[in-house]
Image (spheres, rainbow, N blue to C red):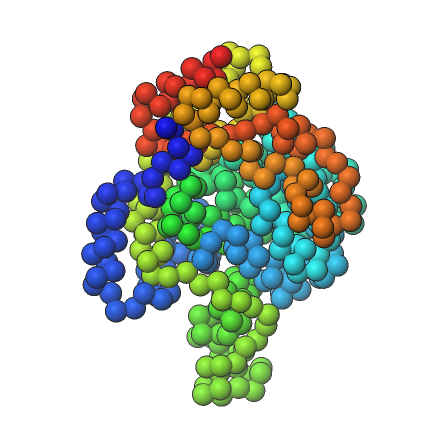
Length: 387
């Protein structure tokens, strides 16, 4: 069977041996030096100034929205655009934290929000929480310019696009901040884990505080001293002084250690996924049953799953059955049209349909794009796509 998740880690055997030795040798397994080292390494590799490691990618989204509220960049009740084709925990934090979600449709040839679709909804938006869907993007430089011109805060959910580039820039680096996931099935695994990246020092401080109870102990000495002076708190009471709304989203040293092992393979993992993607696209291009993609504007497409969108629902049923009969594990294209999800209909009044997201929901599926796929597995998948 060609599984959606092929292994727990890249180079799993050696990673597990190193992890076992690490656990046996450590006195402290709560967040400590390994986590800080991983943050530093990830920020450098992602070409960002700051990275904040958290327990998973979903709470990375929640933490980012909470920090933007705490810092005053967003206000409760504000209208926040988001990609209608997305994962639920991209939009759930907007609902949970008292913001008004506005679903924005995708384009069929990029599966992403375009400047044209954003322009239909941009009036009155305070922010756009953009999902870079399965390693793809639309015209991100133009999207950023439109957001800047309209005073819309751009943030990116980059959990599905680690290593993808457009305009010689890594996806995740076009907005004020971006989130990442290190779930087992994603580009780089720490079992569970997530990251928030930004170049903004003030936002970084809010992220660090809101990750751990709202206290100051992980801030720089100068920032800690300033905050304690402003609050009239001495060093004894500062140990249990809480400055803003927060949760406990901390990762463990186990996650940090795995991250430090896996980040060494970043380029190798991305290169193999890019090569696989090229083969899949070439096979799909020979088959008129599938919706084609226009990604010529992208320098690199790195994804952990390959989306397939059929021309009709009947063709979708046919190909899903063929893939499953061949032993290929498939899933809907992320959460499909988020407006059809029960939680969204329960909490959001405006559920006007987004036709392209609905089409992907109805006619689409995806299968895994793993860096350790065998030649036989790749051949099987390309033969299925070729029809």
